[in-house]
Amino acid sequence: MFSVNHQKFMEMDELSLRKVPYFFIVDFFAQNVEIFKEDEIKKSGLLIGFQNFSSVKKQHALSKNIEWKSFPETLESFKTGFDYVQKNIRFGNSYLVNYTRKTKIKTNLTLEEIFYHSSAKYKVFYKDFFVFFSPETFIKIIDGKIFTYPMKGTIDASVENAAEVLRNDIKEKAEHYTVVDLLRNDLSMVADNVKVDKFQYIDFIKTKQKDLYAMSSEISGIIKPEFKGKLGSIMKKLLPAGSILGAPKPKTLEIILDAEGYNRGYYTGVCGWFDGNNLDSCVMIRFIEKEGGQLYFKSGGGITHLSKLEDEYEEMKNKIYVPIH
Image 1: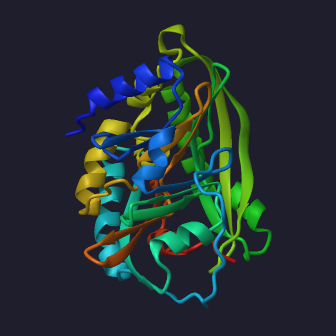
Image 2: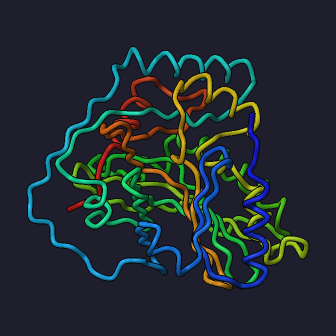
């Protein structure tokens, strides 16, 4: 079911061992892997805005009022997959499932305009097919050290004492612990001396619709000698990203496919920029895709045995936003 594109990961290894800079995009199933050397990015029609790398020089001015409307599914429709996930958690098949939905949206912005005007840690416009503006780092590699920053738990910033409420919420905390544990284990496959450097810190995310707080942790390790310089091999080991899948990974993947009933495609895949020495990569969330002329926003959240249907439904809807302000 999860067949990895080995050839492309080998190509990534080859380039990174030769210290050739490139940008890569991997879909959720790690079957579609695209690699763009620095001089190929412009020709590809790809627009990239990372904190330490940008393929665009000028910012366009936005001269229109934004129209934005989303058409979320009903609570009843959301409940079908949610109940299926909860049943599997009760049976012990999984203890954390990232359940996502696909929501129709209407806006007077093109995908390219959304790219230019959204502010995010990571944003990419891909050939008028999709755009995303992600707050979530997947892994960074800096001078032989590997870092990951799992983000789990969000709250509407207008809630009184929102950051404290989020930090102390039993369900959000349990979810965060699980993902930190999962990613610590994942990192141990490719690194030694893996440890949690920062636990449960809070980020502020500003959006046009509403402001959010999100909870993250930082985990690091020293890359094992056999993985040194082999970016493709590292990615192959770590994908799919634990924070947008759940745990344990293989069984949870089966549950997701049955519960969601749509193809995630590139949504919740990863992409990254390797500068010849170091890597910065992100999880492709906060994601808008064009399908037959219609735009869809893909969003979701982690489900545990403590999850409440209405809260998860609200979280899924809360994440349907553009960070343009």
